[in-house]
Length: 349
Ligand code: AMP
Ligand code: MG
Image 1 (cartoon, rainbow, N blue to C red):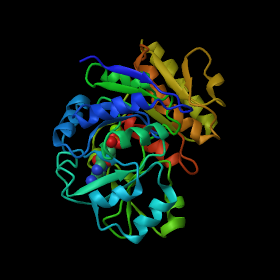
Image 2: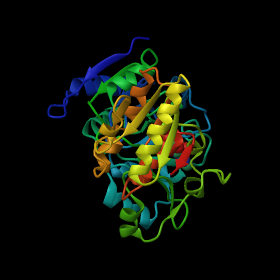
Image 3: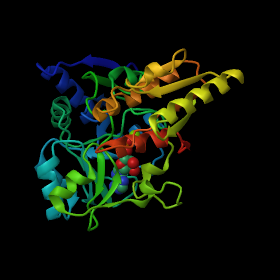
Image 4: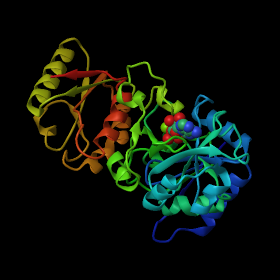
């Protein structure tokens, strides 16, 4: 199959292209599209055959459910049962936006889309291309991140092309995804609701709206053996080809430790890369260093993370050392992705 790539401009969204993309979905095909979080690999959420195609194109295990994307709040009630008052408050505060909520599903949603579960994950993206495309596609688009399973999520159309060219009908190119990390996921079938995946919408921001939330124990203590409630969280994710290790501690000690290790690796005939920040990048002179941006701008770090992990794949490094980013607000979301990419290998200095 030849994958068509269509560039779209946010100032003048070409309706003909949107209609073309929507019609592919309505006929059971697949289209990757931009959202504010990462690129999504879309298919008709109400058509089990489309969902099966999504799993096949990504190489995704079929027990890992898909998020259903909608473009109108009222459409939630067509696919979800028992929408609580708290869910409505979160919806008012954060939709459209990077928040996914889990509800009991209605019959209309096939189990092929929900990985056999009786619950459905729903999100209403704020990206305007995404919203227009979802409407044109019939209103319910199932979309996981548009990457081959296990690889870093895609934040540009070029990333999507790398992973999925030849496997899907079309890619809508809307440029760089502005958030760069997947949505926050909250399970609304329980009270208090439970955060299953941290994201741009933080626990604190949601608690301002609805009071206390819990965090899935599998996120807090990944080695505890607790089975995560979001099935996807148990799989290895985001992994670059080279072996990634996080070094955590006071900045000076981290620079020293990473430098020492890179030199040691060099002596052993191994080539190392470093994931750093604007403030520290110049401190690792001769080596391959990628900066994620300014440490004090977490948004910048988040936006560049997946791209940087993919860039290392184009080099011949055998191992990568990353600085650590656990700080305010979206720090936990950044660290959640980085820890998974590293298979939880952390050196504390
Ligand atoms: P992705 O589409 O790559 O962003 O991954 C979607 C994430 O949402 C995965 O971690 C899924 O396991 C999770 N998810 C989707 N639907 C449900 C659901 N009904 N219950 C719990 N987790 C879900
Ligand atoms: Mg994913």
